[in-house]
Image (spheres, rainbow, N blue to C red):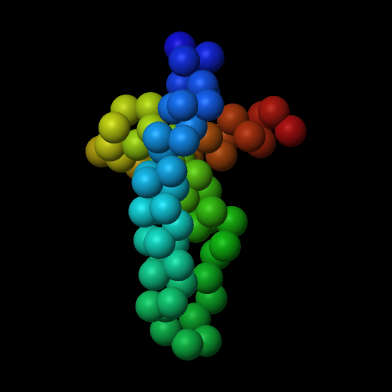
Amino acid sequence: CVLELFTAKNVRSFSSIRREEASSLVQFIGSSPRGETIHVTERISWYESSNTCKAAFGELLKDQEKFLGIVRELMELAG
């Protein structure tokens, strides 16, 4: 499954997903009120998980925040 997901052809086919999510990230940052703190790590995590979910499942998860929490916990345990 992992090998099929990351073939060169599939990675190229995900470019529209990456472009869409990058545009969304830039739009979020650009629309944030001046002087407001932006949690960059949190936004990058959202960007990465959105790309992964859309590439793997075709859409975002219904509970994206819960997914991110699990990923954060795994990262803490791993490192």
